[in-house]
Length: 233
Image 1 (cartoon, rainbow, N blue to C red):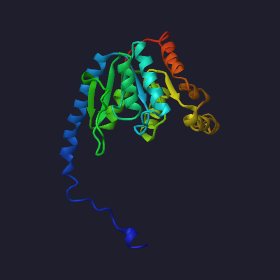
Image 2: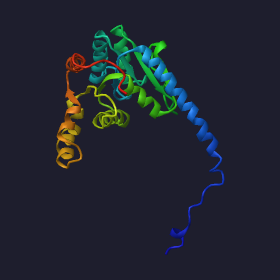
Image 3: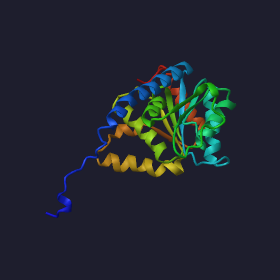
Image 4: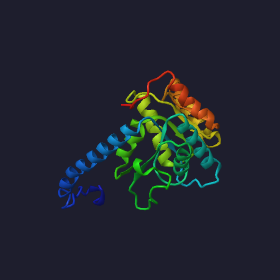
């Protein structure tokens, strides 16, 4: 056997020194959950809106997100975003224009630009841990509206689908906006995934696709004509 491939794993001398840091980080994590649960419970029913941070003002999806957020707040919902630029900024702006609650769940990142100016000061929560932040997006959201976005947007979308599929959370409406962007993915889900048996045909009904912001709002409102508002788990 090659000598290089036969070498045993060498554990760094300072490996054990990270133990105390790991243990104490649990209290930081608990603190983020406590603050998030406390603030968001008091804010009340919200809809989480996702999309690319790279989308600029004037883009059709920026303006659609702004309009959608305005309409959803006029129905009595608050709006939760990641608090950043792009679609998040548009949604927070629309929430303010609809005179609704505009929530920003910020995350500490090396190149993060900070919260956008349309997040209400009373509804700011900053996180160090992505997983704690993701819990907040789901727990107090009465629906997801998902605009075109990157890996983070898709992460939130598939996380929600997984939690609903496995009945780990109460089912809530998930709406994708933008058939020209999401169409290929939706077709792949409906054909490749279903045909290979990796999901059931019923799982395709866990989300809906539209190009109409009015329809997205209607889907969420109609859902709660038959279901009770409340935390999802």
